[in-house]
Length: 189
Image (tube, rainbow, N blue to C red; front, side, top):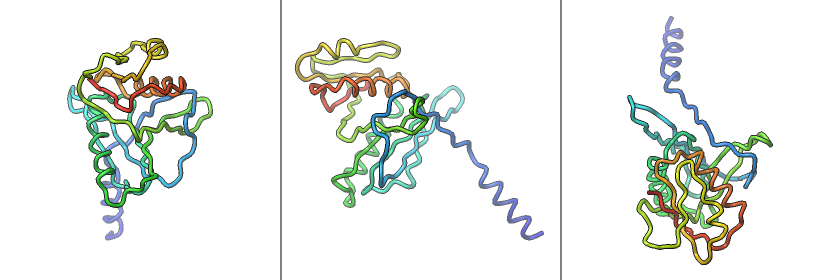
């Protein structure tokens, strides 16, 4: 009876919240394999009509590459502040490796594998830019042609209400263009 009680307690405490993340999908793999990494999870949660982000970074080691697994339903206005905090924490760590990178994960639906897109050097800004040379990606819009035709250094802006899947789709398309004139700052507003 004593062991049965212990087993029941274990089952009750181990059956917590559903921890499912719906990853963005694409038919292209930018990076296929990463070694020596820590996973960080950003879960989609709701409280009534409010959408919330729940961060689980229990296993993040600052000397490793970080893979951000982010639910595709989350809007950028909730995701980006958490990413900024985590990037600052890693950057401020005494144990940070100069060679460690940050990656977003997504699902490659053609090759049926997990794929990654690097964003280590990216600096998120939660304001509108002061520069005139910006290409703004709105929710359900398309600005890729304008980006291809832009001259000089160009900043990217994204609708803060865009969900993470739309953002990753744009990031993959931009990566495929292999442009050299895109700024390392991204504006989310």
